[in-house]
Amino acid sequence: EARAARSRAALSEAQANLTASKAATDSAEVTSSHATIVAPFDGLITEKLVDPGNLVTPGTALLRLEDTRRFELEVRVDESRAARIALKASVPVLVDGPDGPLTLVGQVDEVARAVDSDSRTLLVTIALPSAPGVLTPGMYGRAAFAGPARRLLTVPDGALVRNGQLTSVFVVHGERAELRFVSTGRSADGATDILAGLSEGESVVVDPPPGLRDGTRVTIRTAAVTSPSGAAS
Image (cartoon, rainbow, N blue to C red; front, side, top):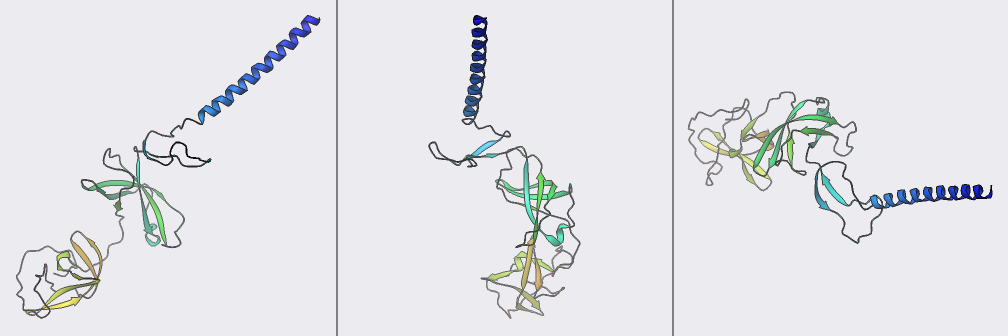
């Protein structure tokens, strides 16, 4: 009976040692895992934020990892226009690539519910199609959202004369060129919106020569030019 009691005691001690060994193994595995960083996805390390020997605390960023499988474009849209943006809608996107502008068709993935109190805009996230070797994080892009049609007065970009913060055009009255200061808006496709200073139907000088001055005599030559609707010719 004494030998049996000693055997049971030895078995209990062995079981306790086994449990302690398993606990030590688990602790060693946890400690070992601290030396290995496992990425949540396949990507590319683009920035190292710490160096060997630096003191870090939990939550300190060590590396910057970019997911090259999927890209998104984030744009700010005025709250008055956000109601016209539908989820999953196709959006043309123009990205300034290294070899020139790149045209893509993205899809609206998310429209933020909260309005930025300073800019009164909503953040819209657009999922972009795969373009290996072309898109990189941080690139600048522009998205075009369809809106209601409106009538605009535009002139060719070459008709604008800029002097510092002042913008003007030469308007043809009779046989004379008249310098007219204008207020401009958005520029696109080689034309600029005129907000004030011109009326529809007035003729302007395109690509005025350096020597042209207010009151200079000019001669109008008719040319076949296709202008947007409502543009001054």
